[in-house]
Structure formats: C-alpha cells, structure tokens
Length: 242
Image (cartoon, rainbow, N blue to C red; front, top):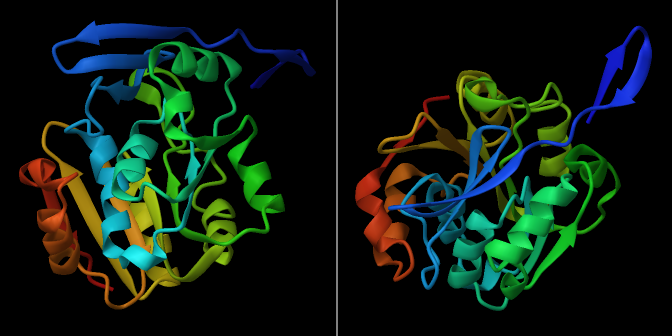
C-alpha cells in the first residue's frame, strides 16, 4: 500500500496484524478488522467464511476442481473448501507479507495445500489464464469499521473474474455497505444471483452463477453437506430478483 504526501509516494506503515484467542476460536485481526477465524481441529468457522465457501456446494462434485481465493488472509474460507473438495486445486491471493507469515505460524495455512500468490488481486486477475470452477472475493481495504471494497470492485475485477470462470462456474463476493452495487453488477452478468446473510454479521455474501443456481438449491446442498450442515441455521439465503 502506498500513500501520497506532498505529491511524493511513500510506503505506508505496515498494517498491524494481531492474533487473538477468544471463545469463538483463534482470530486474525488486521488493521483493527476481523480478517480470519480458526477453530483448531475443525474446518468450519460458524460465521461469514462458511457463507463464502458454501456456494461451492452448488457445483456438482465433479466440478469442484479448481478455486481461486482473492483476499486469502489466514485461509478461513479455503479451509472450508478444502474439507468440501479434498482433491481440488486451491489458489489463494494475499498481498500482505505479514498476514501470510502469521497465517503460517498460527493458523496452519500450509496444511491446506494452497498455492499462495503474494500479489495484488487485480494484477492476478489481469494475467491469470487458468479457468476456475469458483472465484471467491474477500478483498477489503481500509481500517476498522471503515473497511470497504476497493474502487476496482466490481469493475473491472469482477468482469475479469467472470472471464476466468469455467462453464457453469460461480463468482462469490463478500460485501458490506457496497452490497447493492455489487448485487446489481452480478445481476447484469449472471442469470442468477443468491444473497447469503449470516446471523450476527453485517456481511452479505453474493453469488453469481448459472440458471440452476437458487437459494432453494443451495440451501438443500448445504443441508446435505457433512461439512456445513451445522452452519445452515446461521444463514439466510434468498434468490435476488432480476
């Protein structure tokens, strides 16, 4: 991250990265923002990262082959997807070197067998040539309660992401105040958009995908899942009108 002072670029201070132990589990806090949760011995979080991973269940098992995570942090969503698709290829993008160091030291990131790209998510989308069955966007900028999606989400990032999806793939976006804007963009690009809200969180996870996708279909898939069945009671799913 860079800041401009008197017309000159200078390196911003390194974000403060903390690890907290709470009754919920091991928490990663970056710049005052709750960025990851890990419950040692369990794949799931019972929170927003389960909702980010849940749309993978809308894909047939044979289509759960390759996934791209934008904003990997300590790998909370990737851990859930790894449990759902043990043989899948997982690629995670995280720009912050210190976040990755802490994730490896305290969150067992390496155990997830993720190909980690320490890079800017937009730059990766611009050069990536592989196809993905799902792309999961958990990118935020800012500090504390002021975190938000960067200016390049949804455009051009989600346009680039859609171009990298395999046929029938899904694009997942974790959002806060920008939910309506991102939902409108996904609605213009995909036949179906599903919204997932999580009990106790302000986040809205939005899913763009092909016409078979719906809240009913995804809810049924979660209910059948040994990995995410317990989290279903914390989720509110609905298909958004076009």
